[in-house]
Length: 468
Image (cartoon, rainbow, N blue to C red):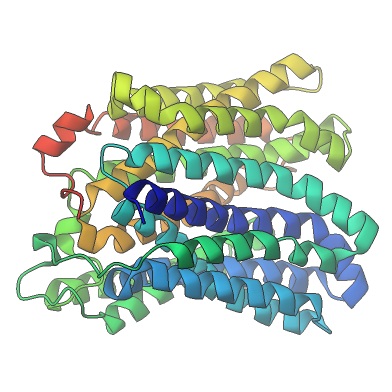
């Protein structure tokens, strides 16, 4: 098999695997009312079908990335795609909401396995100088899948019922599985000095994995429940538990010989800034979209389909800018591109804060265009920096960290705007919520100034190893 064919197959597997997860998340949102009615379930139970998945994925992403570093990303990817497809098929036959929740948790485990592996396979196969282009294509595919999911899911639910939406992912799962199996397996990369003194890079830090999983599960569960429950003793207890577990994890990681999160990796000036930028960008975007959706429906009186169509400029801009991000970075450098993207996100949130009952189509479309254009280029470029900036032996952990950020960021943004709104309805609190997200985006813009410049600068700093 030629190197180019191997690269294309790895890219096909990565794109379809990432799109599979993106489609699944959006189509379920559309199918929730029909699922609740058909299974005679409560709103809280249906919400757990989503929460159970989110908590499971967020808790296991980094450990799943370490499994890919240890056993090979292709093997872990195949396991994740297979589990994702089987759990989706199982939900077609689910007799009650309890089965749906349980299968969604299983699907969360599978999703955690395959998401870092999509990045790990690209890092292992694609040359460093062309890796940003592959990640840009993956990011554009995620945007396209997320945009198409509600439309396709709504049509399937209307004509064939909610169970049909879970069949939607079987075809891309089969394509991803076939592409991954066609890529020749490669031995796990050699050890990196970043692992730490006396460390065995092939070891698994199970206590660290357990502490990280519990800390993230507690944090995500607290954040996603805050919009409904508000600030309460339970919320404070959840955050306090997350902080205590995080401190216990930090202490354990400093003392163990085989850390799940090598301190040298976390302190890397190449990895930390783009991870911070991704956290700020994802929090600002979703924190703005949350009240904006209510604004379109409750204030402007649009129905769900109309509001989805009005927000299409966001998806279109995200797809286009993500696809062209690698060309922009080659010409202007990563720092300039991400700074520009974060500036667009900040401008989009500020313009959103000015929307009111008299706002027209052009004003609203401009807000969505700025948000989508900025986020698309930031996500693609910062993700490439994270994956390429880690040594080959830590690519899975780096990918797991990136995916964890992309799960925690939206929950954090929505929790912040809910706190800002207080008892005010989300749609009516659009202005203060968007201003709060503008502050988050501005913080991300400042972090972007710490990113490396052109690729040559990154190579001089030792940001990534040569292609294995």
